Length: 248
Image 1: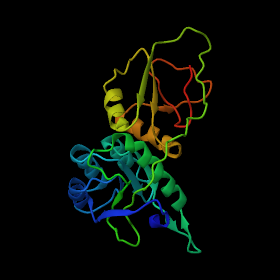
Image 2: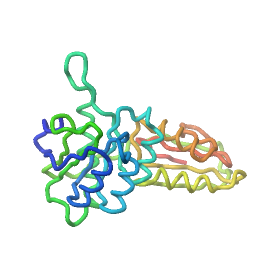
Image 3: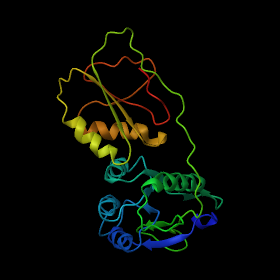
Image 4: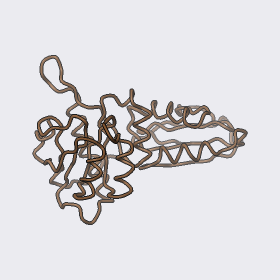
């Protein structure tokens, strides 16, 4: 499916997380498509090791992002840039989700190009790590051309206090590796904190709600999705939707 895009080419394929770590150390690709559930070493641990030893952009590709939310955010916390559902074969032979996977591949590869290691290929090369990897169904690929990332966040929701008097505000912004760092920081805050916490985390809009649920379970305190017109309260933690600005 991936090779249907002429700008992508196969680099290497790993059958599990352990092999992915070994192959990444020998040949750093421009992007790795990382499965989560694999023998010997799962995708979370493989991501953690690769980002420590042979850092490169990683896109998590899993059967269900929402169903594997905890593992997805562990992987994002370890350094993966994004996550997307694995394309599925439809009743009439078509692949559902293929277009979205290709879109994410190009987006993540271009985003990660800013931090590409010096020994990376001049062409974008994507490698795949999956328990069911095969040249026919789970290729590793890489865009051969480079285009500027031009998408801008949409104008967005406002959290407007009813008056100018409000409790102090703690603002936190995070991107790559943010979920795990956010969980650590927020868990350390006192339960009687006399301030509201506003969080902007780079995460795809379709699983922002899952991120909020995961974060709440990790820190054992309520976390809410920011809504227009909400007045931040002391002790409250609000997370912005990915395609929205948070305006106070």
